[in-house]
Length: 290
Image 1 (cartoon, rainbow, N blue to C red):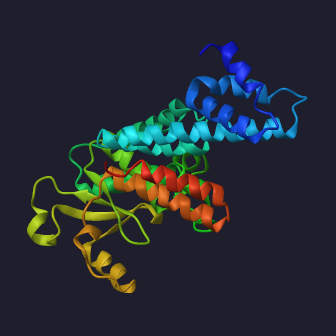
Image 2 (cartoon, rainbow, N blue to C red; image 1 turned 90 degrees about the vertical axis):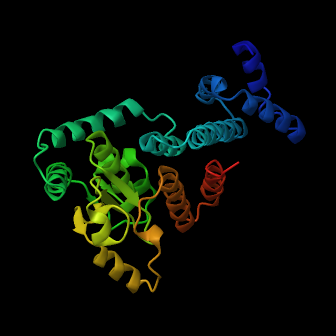
């Protein structure tokens, strides 16, 4: 469809007949991404009426939601191998104009600063201490305990800007950097919390821990505190929960992004924002099988 044809459709957006508007809206939404710049230019016209402007905003939001849904579904259906790609897709839901290259550049700077201090002669504990020093002390990342449930704590672009996040968002950034530095660290989906497991690739830890090949755990929300199995046991005991194997073993990247969406859903519920809640419920279906 040409831009002239698209513009003709957009001119019908403020038709007072609701039935005609719904048909026009559905047609515009079906065009998807290519219609966005034309809609945005139409929205910027000074003498727009409230009805026209509100309907454009509604259509733009629906298109952006569809784009995010499709991106998450493609990511899921291809295995969810790239954690950063999944996290950026979630960011795009709220920040439609997000400069993803800027996010990647910020991560590259962090990675470089950590890499310069690492060497192959360090033990796993020493590598994590170096990582923690650069990440938390030098760059100043920390858990946002004062405003824990704020939605911005779940968007990694916001976390990179403010240096504050929740357990999951900090762990996502931590894991992305660890993977690029070839450190064997993966997220662990604890109830009410999220930590990282440092995996023992030699197999030595198997008999000692009795929980697969995890050497130790890292709490990114608490300045990278190193935890053992006993601390996980105690945490579960305080919650009066059984020691399920899944509480000790790494989860998939898809599980991580699903939890990120659920965290956002809960944040918007606390803010009494039902429209955002419905959006997040829809996005969660992109990560379902089938």
